[in-house]
Picture 1 (tube, rainbow, N blue to C red):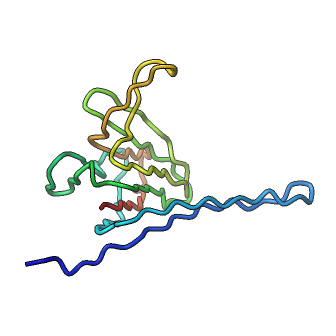
Picture 2: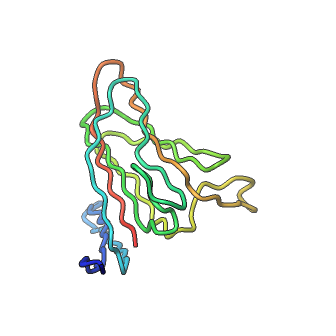
Picture 3: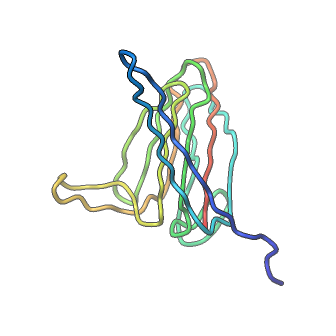
Length: 152
């Protein structure tokens, strides 16, 4: 049986709008990703002082696991109005932490070939992302995280 899903084009626009000293300094950047045939979007509530896996990547699909070579776009947004969360981007041997203040988003156009670099800046070696987790450092309050991934 053939799929009845018709792939589409994902358009992502990032817009900055500001006037400084009466001068417009706006900018809009657009990313277009063709042949998207799978979207996964969810809101995840992270309990206080907890670390949760948001995404896992590999070569086969599984519960909460995506094929890394098919991943084209990923966004994680901190939906809280106060709490800072920490995102951990992992490869098989390295990791990188990124803090997201309230309302901030982390965006990556994965395209199946990006990852966390190791080594010196002049000779970085990228490795595939294997897992992305989020940590809520709050002692008492839960945080909502908006997770979005597009795949071909």
